[in-house]
Length: 82
Image (cartoon, rainbow, N blue to C red):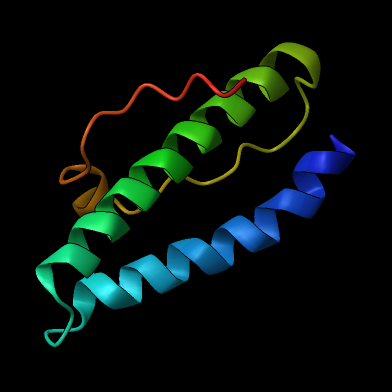
């Protein structure tokens, strides 16, 4: 759990950066595509952390998901780094 606490702030910075790229009309298509891939990876990580927490730390608050308008546009990935 301590590791997740150290990882989440960095992940939040990366999520914020990706969201800025997506909202910037001057971003290239390649930048936007990479941002979507990054966001999909982070959402998958959030889902896995929340699942782990619910099984091992039932009283822990869940990590918030990405905004729905972003989630609906994300590609599906299979993150098997665990």
